[in-house]
Length: 167
View 1 (cartoon, rainbow, N blue to C red):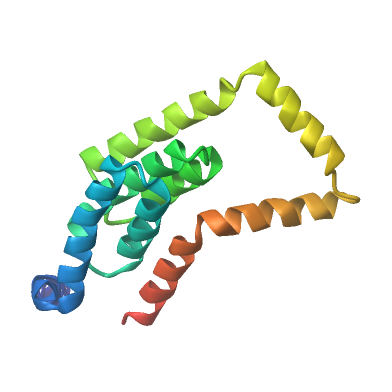
View 2: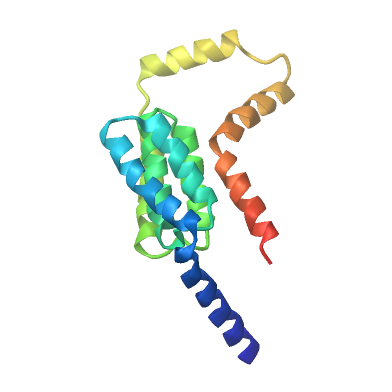
């Protein structure tokens, strides 16, 4: 029990000292920049900044809000699958708790409803384009889905790699 308390205290000291790191200030400034980019409706650039912030070891107290904004920006860009994947990763993230977790779960439910409400004309176009570009074998479809998913979750893999490097 005593060892656990010492480890907890060390973690608290490390997280406190992060605010004196230049990366913390860069992440903080990027967070403000995200707001400005979203107001200008430059969602592509905003998504890039949010991915950088999420992959950094800074701003753990805002991870829920960061994931929520990332999912919202992806939704604005029409990338509903990517937004749902971000929501699912946020729910698995240990730093997202309380109201932020609830907000992300609600956003995921709204995304599922939005995906199901796709107008019939769009569904027909999607079916036509899938039949025209249908893969030659079922294994090719998995590869295409994987390639599309890889674009959406590149920040997740970089975050996991950083976690593995930390002691």
